Image (cartoon, rainbow, N blue to C red; front, side, top):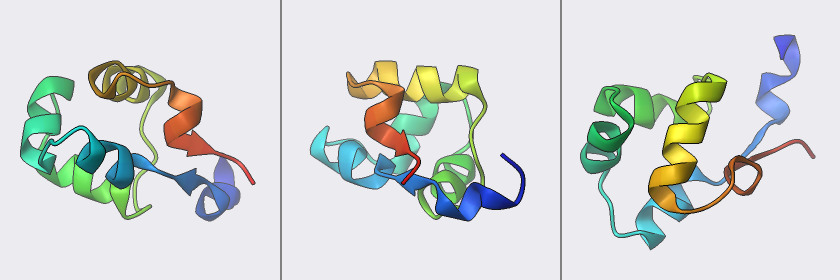
Length: 70
C-alpha cells in the first residue's frame, strides 16, 4: 500500500467492541499479540491478508467492512 496507508479507513475497534471482545480476546482468536491488535486499531500497522481474514472471521464480518479505501 506504500505511502497511502494513512488513507485506509479502519473500523476494527468499533466492530471489536460491538462483538463484546477485548483487544486481548481478539488477539487470542487471531493468534497475534494484543499489541498487534492495538497497532492495527491505531492505524500504525496494516495487517496481512491472512490476519485481516482471521480477524473478520472472528468478528463475523467481511474484511471490506473492517478496512476500506476512501
